[in-house]
Structure formats: C-alpha cells, structure tokens
Image: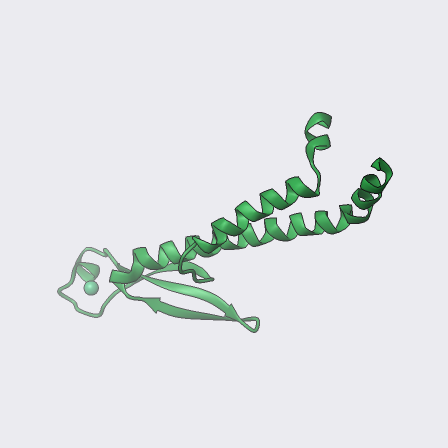
Length: 121
Ligand SMILES: [Zn+2]
C-alpha cells in the first residue's frame, strides 16, 4: 500500500484526470432521474388487464426540479433509449465526482510538491 501511495504525485493525478475527461466526452446523451414502473388497467373490460389481472406496465421518469419531484411519461418505444440515457447520467456523475476528487487532491498537494521540487535543485 505504501509503495502504491508513493507513486501518486500531481503528474500522475493529472494523467488519471485527463483519461477521465476523455471518457466524459464520449459519454453521449444523458438524462437525470429514475425510471419508475407503473402498473395499471386500461379500462377496456375485454383486455387481459381486466380479465386476467395482467396489468399494463408503463414507465415514468421521476426527477427533481427545485426540490419538487416531477414525472414524465416514457413512450414505449423510447424505454430502452431512456434507460441508456439514464445509465449515461449515472456514469457522468461518477466521473464528475472522481475528477473533482482528483482536482482537490492536486490543490492539496500543490504547495508541498512545489517545495519538494525547489529542494531538489
Ligand atoms: Zn388493458
């Protein structure tokens, strides 16, 4: 563990960050929120949802706007697409958090490493 820790320096952190930034540009469309399935009857008494109690499933995207939860209906033929966009958003958040963490570490190490370099002369 110590050996690993010794290798970490600002140059290493910057390389790691740059590769994350590259991933970021390739992430594609994204949407926040979470997909929620709603089961319902359609109202037609000849439909399987009424006769066999096999309810229809529709998806909604729940999301927050200024602290208020909102929902948008997801058309059936967009379900897979929205799922993908939603996954992309999750990845995006992970990468953003990781880049922020690295940048804080760079800020933290800045002065110390500058001193080390000066001392080396
Ligand atoms: Zn039905």
